[in-house]
Amino acid sequence: MPEMETIACPICGSAEVKVLHTHRLYTMSRCKGCGFVRQSTRLTADEMRTLSYDPEGGHEELHLGHQAGNEDLPAWQPKPLEAYEVCVEAIERARPKVKPRGLWLDIGAATGSLLLAARNAGYEVGGAELGTPQVKICKEEHGIDVFHGTLREAAFPDGCAEVISWRQVMEHVYEPRAELAEARRVLTDDGCLLIEVPNFGGVKYQLGRLRTWLRVSRPFWEGLNLPQHIYYFTIKSLRELLAREGFEVVMWTTYGKYRKQPSLFQRVRTSIRDGLRIGNKLRVVARRRTG
Image (cartoon, rainbow, N blue to C red; front, side, top):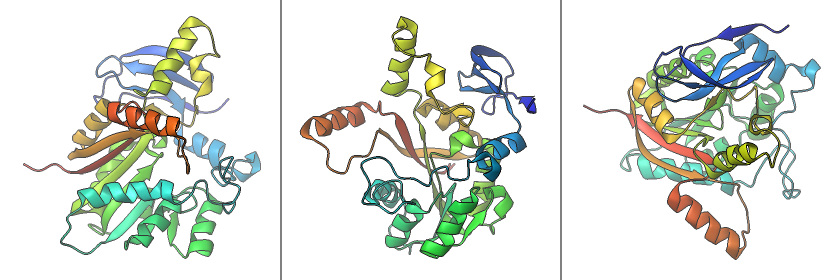
């Protein structure tokens, strides 16, 4: 039997929960203190690392293949680079324009697509990644020095980074407040955080729960990336988490699946989705709180 642990809410510290779903590897719950949806009982960090990255388990190839319809891309590249350039554009809108671009650290860098987009924009780049083949691709294919491990294990110097990013990674991080505290140490005083996570307030999740309630689809939780996703954020819970470690949100939006050549219908739908901010993924830029 795998080793399990029970944890309090990382945002408000409450241990009181409403259980939403149980499984032998996790319990999904809603915090009675702040409403944050998370695993209240979960695999230990060592167990999860083995489950997700043990080469004998066949999981070392996670995130190496690209999406269907992108057959013209190299095997290591999940999406066209334009899908990552929007992240750089979000930072460009938030950063001071009078200073040279500094170091961009991507945590959970995968095969380096976001770092390539950042480097093309003039940033120095580096980061951290748990997957062995992904680190190898970053170093051998792109010449990017990515640390094999976590942000805290990397022990980057104080104040060395202008940007730290977690693109679809923070929902996997075992100790998000400790992660953000480490980011605060590594970040320059006027640096920016970029965080992208699944948006639990998005239409996909709202409709998924409704379909389950109406019994017209498979049970809601079975369709999610569990147990790897430990948390499911909304803008409210992510804003509260950042505030606990001295950060404030300066920009946020939502988005959905990237399409290189969207149809007119898809463009209209995207415009409505982004205007209402009900997309399935959440993008946040944050900076140190002032005052």
